[in-house]
Image (cartoon, rainbow, N blue to C red):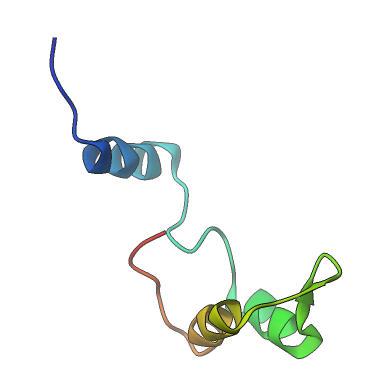
Length: 64
């Protein structure tokens, strides 16, 4: 019986399931979200604007 660190388990999930680090948000989608200013009818927060601006500018998030 081995003990796993939660961080190790999360990284294994991402690597083995093929989930992209940016949760599948493309540059085009990020630009659209910024232009519209909302997701699912709800306004995006300042932190979300910052994140989508980063992705729209070609940034690659290193953590989820």
